[in-house]
Length: 264
Ligand SMILES: NC(=O)c1ccc[n+]([C@@H]2O[C@H](COP(=O)([O-])OP(=O)(O)OC[C@H]3O[C@@H](n4cnc5c(N)ncnc54)[C@H](OP(=O)(O)O)[C@@H]3O)[C@@H](O)[C@H]2O)c1
Image 1 (cartoon, rainbow, N blue to C red):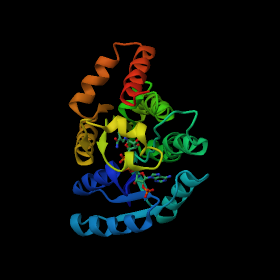
Image 2 (cartoon, rainbow, N blue to C red):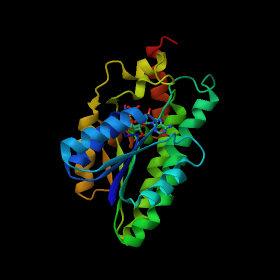
Image 3 (cartoon, rainbow, N blue to C red):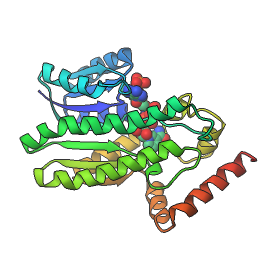
């Protein structure tokens, strides 16, 4: 059976994407850690949209997790036609004070798991001569962001990796799309590593999209065969204006802005 595989599907943007793909009659394979949420979601999506929805509850930070997902697909005879690498975490605060293990987990999930899943599922897509990969980055992939230092660097990696991969895959008929949301109303900023004073400064008074808006823009970009999309008009303007300035200047301005808001 052909499926669309979505990581980080139990909440936020991933959950909204699952609904959008189900509306379009894609059978789904949902990945996250929360088995109970995924199970309920699969039942609800099958009932509402008449599709087949399955899940694998796995922590993508665990060594070998991506291999486990791949092997499970082989066992269940699932052919991944669309791979959505959406699961991601971040942190806010002064890097030298942040918990090292949490910082390394950002790289493990946002980068290692994403690269592993692309590497494992691409050969099948190339062999079949079709398929799509959607990698979710962030507007933080466009500017070095002090006090979200590791997160921003991890998303720079996603952006560079995905844009290069787009061109490698083009001759094989595999479509690769990079999507970059800006601040979005999800649980992302509520995780312990983000829900601190630095994280609050970032979201205070910010103009946020909903996860449904981001998912709708993503699926439209994918349907149009686009390879690059920044979600939200203001984010598109921001990334274009930002591209006119040197990274060092932007990093300095961001850092000054945040320290001022924190009275530091
Ligand atoms: N929200 C924003 O403001 C924003 C802005 C720009 C970019 N983004 C990007 O958008 C993507 C989705 O973020 P979101 O805002 O929707 O976040 P979210 O609401 O926190 O959802 C994150 C999803 O990832 C799953 N997840 C987290 N750690 C995992 C792990 N170790 N293994 C497997 N699954 C894991 C979570 O499920 P479980 O807890 O069940 O595992 C959940 O389904 C991320 O890549 C994020 O960087 C978000």
